[in-house]
Length: 389
Ligand code: GLC
Image (cartoon, rainbow, N blue to C red; front, side, top):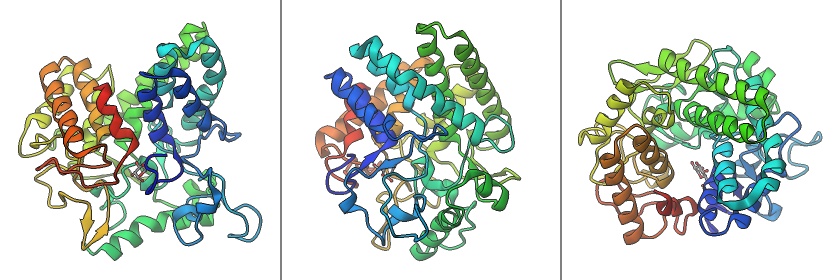
């Protein structure tokens, strides 16, 4: 569970992060964490984003049913066991770390076919325009729920919480009416998005899949994963790079409308080893710039000079996350990405600040980038990534 009180189920990318941290202390426990996810993989390869291990906590009135398929004819007749959504595909990276930590060849043999099926599902079912970038069908699939990166895509005009809530949830309502059938959703609606964070993590995951497959000499899988990863980087550079913002931006809908807002999504392609040096340099510049992402406590999820930036995640007292505060999982991606591109000092500055906020404020979901104060759910799992920076 990401947090016992606030998030009492198993979440996909949280579990991948938990496994990465567990791998440093207890590789068997780490492997079990991932087994919990692989156990619910669907026939087409999707690994759902939430597993409701405790169904007495599944509510009819909250998001649980909305984000899941309807089983049987009566919508609320039976409680879902999983959602029908994805999250950023950090699975191969987690499996690789757990195998390296000593979970052994047996775990590799057990996990690899499932991992391969998962990435093949993304390539086959999630790319309706065939440009190599995968599409998400709701902003909640990106893991960055209410980020202003999605505001223009959902047609947000004001800043009233009721409007933000309704417009963000509407695509999910339509998905539910299509019973989360991807063919129907892509054919019938226009709300899917090509998300930069999701695709950067996908490209990084494909490289990890290629390395895992190489260990068992599965050459065809290695070639497929490498080629697909090459295509992802090329497509991100060609389609999502904004030369004016000097950042990557999301694409919305079948006509690929560009977001014009500086959010943390735009920096995450630093995790791609084949990102050209000058592009990595532009992103590193942002991370050093006190006007945008070089906050006193980096890295804010929204650039400080964006009008939507908020230090906390409350709008008129209501919780809308990912509109400013920093989180340890995105810092983890960026610290490792910066190091791989030769920005060791900048990476260390972010890592040191990350450890500091955890030391002072405990393991928390979010921290205020101006004061370092914890502002999210307490005793939060992926904040333990502080030990892996
Ligand atoms: C929120 C976050 C998402 C995370 C989940 C559980 O929905 O936006 O990224 O996986 O909480 O921690």
